[in-house]
View (tube, helix red, strand yellow):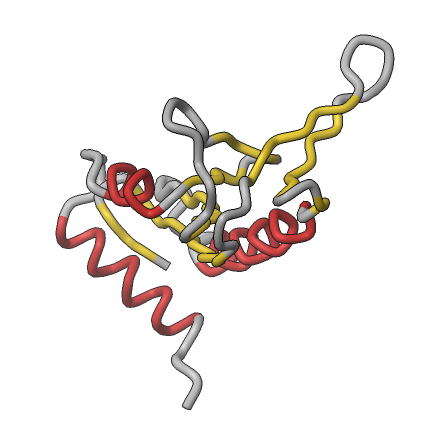
Amino acid sequence: MVVCPSGVFVVDAKRYRGSRPELKVDGGLLRPRVERLTVAGRDRTSLVEGVRRQVALVREALVDRPEVPVRGVLCFVDADWPLIGGSFTVDHVAVLWPKKLKALLVEPGSLGEGQIAQVQWLLHEAFPRQS
């Protein structure tokens, strides 16, 4: 988890060396739209579902702080990203690479230092470190 001025980011880093994450969309006009994450041609949508579950737990821990945005991110390290574009969202989870994640985390936001410290403490209390 990262707490920064723009909110809380639940980050799940994955290493898929040389493989390309892609968004696959089925359906649309006549059928319900279904988004899937594929990596190297294999369906990896379960990774998105895992991040969504983690985001739900964080939102539950911050139930008294509804003004704090909580977003899920899958960060693919050493993946084969295209030179232009590449990042996308699947079911409200951002899929991107480390430099793109860094740019997202340093964006300005509405949380001040005191609020960030309070949110960090709430999350520390809700999710203590495991020894």
